[in-house]
Length: 332
Figure (cartoon, rainbow, N blue to C red):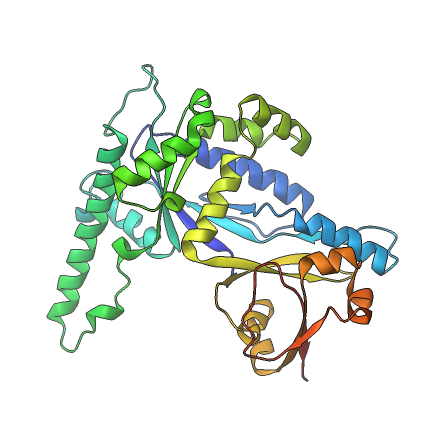
């Protein structure tokens, strides 16, 4: 599959724009390090944090006796800023119709709700996290009801095949203050229970902090986060939870040209995983040479891993695992 696509929704003044601006800053920093296609203003493409890539790059440089490290190409997540949600969106209020068409295009919905206290910001349309969550949920269900009714009027319509918005995977972003970050775990449990969601579907983020972090070096970010009493950025946790909610993992490839992470669904076969690199690889698939990540790093590359018998030759039905380092053998 291509990069994971998450649509950000939220009522006015919940911090959605601040969070999206942080993502755009992160995107600009990413694009400066690696050439990327031009991106629409309402889409932020950010790298998936993956410490394994740096280790793969080092091992490959040593194994292949390269003069410089091969570039790292992380998996990416596309965040789509979906504007225009207010009560009545399903009936076209605000930018309702545009809002609904954008939601149809994404893999998952990230609903930003306001938890931070700030008397200077008017809560226009936003009452409390539970009510805000229910408004969006209701709008999606109303839109689905309308879609279903339209299709039922058509003869032989198969309603089961409809892309129902309320059935899309849901993540909730609790926009908290910096002071609340150290209690992120407790807040996530509390609101997951209130919203009737799994804990993995709820993530506490301080959008303002994320905006600041986007301009920091990795080292400065670690120091700043430790001062706040947390070990990882909210964005990193959000991406991890997005992968968990959608049942996604990554496999890795390593060579002189690049080391790269590829996004795949849990349970995919080696043959179909090859198709993520190039469609033609599915029909031309011969086999997959697979080595566990730790073995690849410890033995410093393909050559030693093969000599030590750590590389397995897998067929088309092999089920891929997270962190598999793979070299696909493809026919002409």
